Length: 174
Image (cartoon, rainbow, N blue to C red; front, side, top):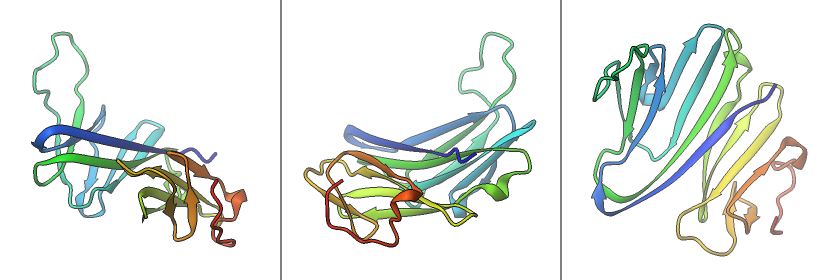
């Protein structure tokens, strides 16, 4: 099964703030800040998370709640991924790839894409197939371009393998 997800968050404040993106799990997460990658395994299931945008994020992991729960909830791990400097806006692009234990090798290689007015991700699967998911950048109107040739007018799009995106450059809107 080819199940992956992309989370695209556009954030804005009245003034500069340090933006945070949180991930919670019952098991300790393995964090590779240099690769902007997090792995977690819980029993027979796991997930690989890649933070593709913005670059230069700060990763912090703890097993403590800011305010401890009043009930007897199981302990949890909390990953905070934050921007290095305060800014009035931010865009986070994360890829979430769930898998069965032992199937990490069946996950795709992930390549972040930045185009003219768009952000996206290409999933390169071990069997040679590829999928592209794209998002219009904040404040952009009209057509945007991604992956060097793909011109899109909608806000969010996905192209499956059957579109042969690498083989036929096109200037048509989809």
